[in-house]
Image (cartoon, rainbow, N blue to C red; front, side, top):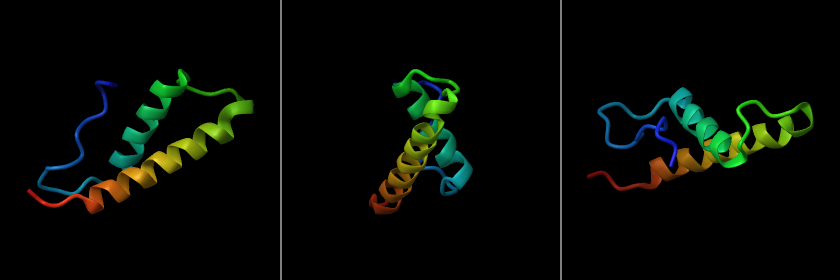
Length: 66
């Protein structure tokens, strides 16, 4: 997995929207192979980042506390 994605759960402060989006962006970059997508693929890339960020927020909200 991408080493630059840090764990967002278990810290004293809940993950911020910026941290969640940064993790989603890194994940989509890794999976797609694009650091910056072409104009033709930009919409699909951004949609994927938004969907991964939403899924991450849902996951973090659903996990039981330790």
